[in-house]
Image 1 (cartoon, rainbow, N blue to C red):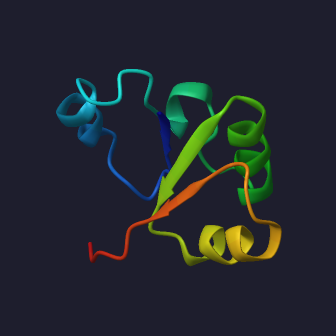
Image 2: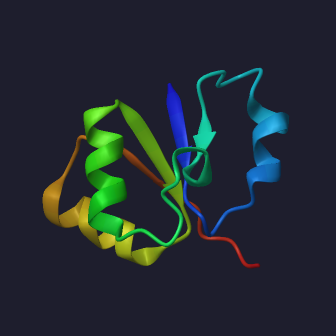
Length: 78
């Protein structure tokens, strides 16, 4: 499973999970920071990523459009 971490999550997560999910990246790796959610959604869909975010907009989009891409909604504080 390839995880694509949204910009609202720290890229410092990657070294901690890279052994379990070796192809995971942060959106800033692809220059997708400050990018519209629809563009990130399409990028993840085209490149077989699972989006990981705490952004409720992605959650709404996943309910509206279904998958792919799959979406992991982290409901945690800052």
